[in-house]
Length: 543
Image (cartoon, rainbow, N blue to C red; front, side, top):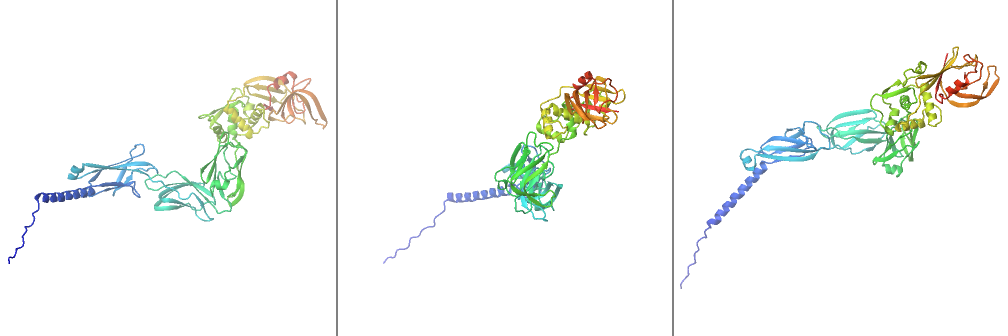
């Protein structure tokens, strides 16, 4: 029997083409890996930093930093320096500023040949802003007021009733104590989160004691002084809408202006036009009770009303306005610019008068009249001018600069109203022969013989403004012996001191004491002088 032998096969041989492809793939993979390693090790990153402006990280094969630049929002160059990869400005920057930082790196040797000699990276960022985490706080009696921030701050500035304070803080500070403060108050707080920043815009931080009613802090404080055009701030411990229920406070006397909410807890009133009347008590009434700091500052009181004192206009500004409008024998000139031609500017000037100087309108003003003048002080010239102003403007004549007078003075100033006549003055000599001299607008108009009071009824020495001016009337009074007199038909009467007046009286002679206190004049002289002595005209009786 025959046995078949098994078939033998030779091993397969690898194709040279396949071998080459495998080697090529391996080399390619190696090259790619090498390129990746080179790219990774030669990279440069620029990112934000927790303390510096930015941080630059140059990898081992990245090369060296050749140039640093930073630009502000308008292209202005900002100098910076680098230390341990941290980029820091060489001058302080404001919070919230948008910046662009550029870093240029020179690559080494063959990497530079392969990837480019230089590599520039840039970063756009905004400098950090310190934010207060709680603007309205309840603080118990005896506790320090602490202001908390949403992130650590390095510098804080706060301004309040006790002045301004600036503090530099250690790194990581998030809460700053303001120390012991009044039970209710508000401060303006500004902070910087970095040592290379300036402090930012201030934020109002208010604190209140515990109370059954919502607590209200006011600026100006209750019962204090406020200017006519001064802004009023009301800050509440609860949202304005919760406290007032959608209703605004009312002001008395009426004050034009607008209420607005500067934030959820603060209501602001900005006067317009003439603002609060000068010399008034400004009362504010709220729709609901609140707790406010008492006048002594020792606690809270529940109330729905708060009031402030609006100062009257200054005597100096009163003189300036009366001079500008032709009621004084003087002219006033400002040292700088004239007061702005707006109600607000004029009202402010009434409280804070501008600097300037006075000079006499007429070169030959009588020395008796000049002796009555005092800058910035009440005097007879001002009182007479004020009475004349009231009479010309059809107001009650009392010689007092109340709110209505100030309003009309300012209104006239805004409308360029001026008295179109000269200044008159009468002075009477009691030395025999007695005379009355009428001076007007720089000229002596008339010198007439006159009679003053007899013994026991002397005409009082001094200077007085005319307060009543009538062409004819009945004069009555008491004689030195106690008997009563009543004389009808007296002509050309100008009362200046109680029952004393300039007037006509028929006498056989003039120039000696014959009256019962008045200044008697001949008919023609009395009629002439009467035309120049309306209400407010000054009469001086000298011995």
